[in-house]
Amino acid sequence: LSSAPISSRFAMPPTFATIAIESHPKARHGSSKTPAPLTAEKRKENKEKREEKKDGIDQALAAWWESSVALANDLSNRYKQKPKYFLEMMFQGGARMVNSQTKINPYNTFRAEKAAECRDNGESKDAPTLHHDYFEEYKTLTDAEKDAYVERFRDTKKREVKLRRDTPRGKIQDVANIVRNIKLLMVGLGTRVRVEGFFCIVRNSTDFHIQPQWFFTSRELEQYMPIATRRKWSTVEVGTKVEAFCVAGCDVVST
Image (cartoon, rainbow, N blue to C red; front, side, top):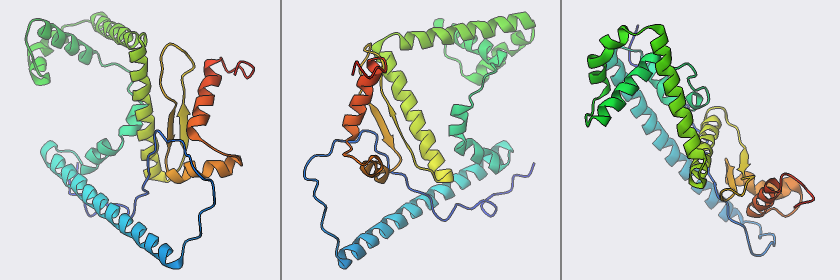
């Protein structure tokens, strides 16, 4: 496989779409009067500020891209893989979160059990040491024994998930993790293919309490909502009403 440096074959796009994140918008209070139109001088000043900000972001992203390419080339030389292989590993994280591995590797489950046994005995072994000490033992296992390791691993994971979700704190942490992953996916998608969007997540149970989780890919999109709905819009108020509707079992009469 060719492992030639890729700086000449892969170039960073000239610009990236900058996505502003607003995860917990605040309610807006005060006068609803239409602001006075900007003067030509003020518009020019605002334009210069936007261009200056954009140039700063472009420079920062260019430096980040160059360092990423340099790292990919370095890893290519060290591990004899194409630089593109490492770039794909860097930038396909969002896809891996969605398309997670469904088939469980029996050797990984075997090694995980051995690592747990070592910890119980007060030992700490890294992956290479575990492989050196136990790989020959793994090769003697029958298919049925390997399947048993996989099943025990699945049972352990199921118990961990159940334990996390059975407590209010566990549910809150679960929601927070999912919200964070959705944000990362949306930001990554917006950067790659230029899309905008928003979401709102609310609880439908009284077993735990969280604030409605709002996310807009840009502040301008949220500011457009009063125009889209043709009425006064308060993100906090809408989230509270949606939550009440869901907690009531999505029953309009109850709310």
